[in-house]
Image (cartoon, rainbow, N blue to C red; front, side, top):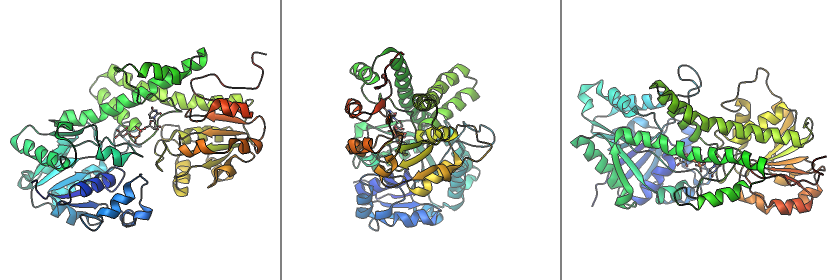
Length: 478
Ligand code: UDX
């Protein structure tokens, strides 16, 4: 029987929250406390009907475990004091000012968490780096801990990257492809790794729990995300080639994906990848490589971002060109604002880049997304896309954009529909009714190749998709 560890997690976000819920559920003898300084967020975690994040299956887990062996608190110090194992799952967003701005990770939250642990802890702790960190970050943590030699021997740092994807966090956590734990190659390091492995072994088969040295594990997280994102940029670059040749990108993806060396997953063309991880981790990798003087390596990975920016830009240009080179004053329906389906998260969403470009062209837009909250949409619109140059003049957001809760209202009287997110419900709408209510010619730009294009074309729509020729009723080649 394994020990009844007292576990705490600093940071009640997308990673900390779901991970701790699953640990609490699977390790009933462990006490799990999630601590976050934001009182509002902690209050929301106490209400399973209004959790601060939307994730299928999460509310049920919270209901089952909260108050039993899962606790949420704003008292970080008490949580640290009590814990044997401390997960650090605070945010590490890309820096927006100063050295490494636009590439390097902002480590201020991580450093203050480490300093608080060093100040407060009086008993031995295993510190688990859960946040995505630059390679050799564990060293920084260890240095903070060793500034006080008295307390230094209390701490062991291990790295345990999170591979869950949003929207499928709970199944990903329950049935991970692998759990990776990196630790120091000393007896105390091995012992710390073993104790964390024992926690996961409550539900993950032992052969799926792999252990490495600290630096390999930190590096693997960046590399895993860089490889995944690279596949999307690769297929997206081919989508442009397909449009120019008459090949169909989804057919190409299927054909190459059946080669088991390539594999079928992550080959779905899109208007560009979004999310909090891919861009950030690649920028981090690029920063690391270039600060080590490895310029070719840095340039190679930077191209993954370049293609992603290009994909968003060329999709938007196609919208403007096909709609007779002007969209000023036209109503455009934006379906989906989240960076992917089944989440209300909008970080780095391609929809924002698209809307900004359309706004610059003078379009009016009605946005519908089944899960994105109103405040978040306006906050994103106010700040604009992260890699775009900041506008000197404020854009007329509120005059031109409306956020609607009924998709049919978004499309009524519109010149065009733009699919930005692959929500399943978009496939179920009554498109004949929608067509009848639109200005003609009625355009659909499907940025996810989600809908049945032939059917829509037969109804009378002009259909533009990615990686294949448009379906148009206009005579070609005049
Ligand atoms: C990702 C990784 O998958 C996960 O392992 C890591 O821990 C965090 O980053 P996430 O960002 O939640 O997870 O979502 P993911 O499903 O990977 O999608 C990222 C983006 O790529 C989305 O915008 C998605 O729409 C896009 N995508 C994904 C494609 O465009 N095509 C694909 O084939 C797959």
